[in-house]
Image 1 (spheres, rainbow, N blue to C red):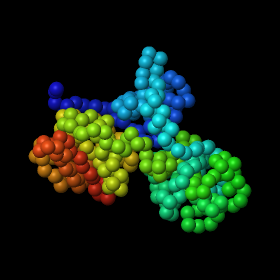
Image 2 (image 1 turned 135 degrees about the vertical axis):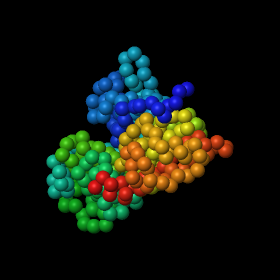
Image 3 (image 1 turned 90 degrees about the vertical axis):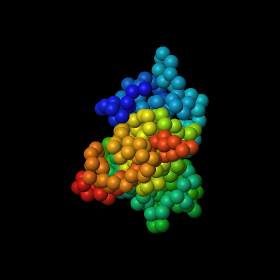
Length: 308
């Protein structure tokens, strides 16, 4: 194998749990489907679609023949495990932009505090904002606050047949896709995401691919309250994540390489690359006495200052 760290890759992958969910829905509705058409439906590049499909294939969710791409039995199982209902609808005074998309998440009321957290998730995923409602004791209410007006409550009840402890998330944006993406992203965060991406499958190795590192990187990203995360295995290029997205699926950096080479945690200021001048902390991943990979986080407060 050659020196992979010297390979130049211009195509970066940008997709989130929303795009994976959307892909599962599209592959269910349009059987079979080609990669180019799926790319158009997801509104992401063909390179990102290829990476996404590679991840689905890795976990046995799809199979391909001469006619196109199909969901496997495992893919259908994951699709069916996402328990929520969606409807594009005009909800009037409840939102602030042109298009709205509402999603019912069953039995999720205990996960809602004030509704601000859900709005932040929607904004990070391309919406203008989000409104969160809780159905409890036969009433549809704002979190910890007033009941919505009876006419609006009736509309939601007819659309979703609300049950006690259901949550309604309404994404709002300047496009239908933006509203849908915001609402679905919030709903996925409430149910804990898509299981195949959040779980670690098997033990990492010194040649782990981007797809094998992505679960760990996303877990650290969420644990560190959205700080940018970079990770790579010893013998392969890695992944860079910001704002819940894969920004680069063929990434390396000198601090990551130094942590792998020395086997020591690096606390330093990056001298070049996308985080030049920013404090980073990178730690090696040791398996049975051998460094197989490294993962690091970026000081997001300094990042905002540098770009502001």
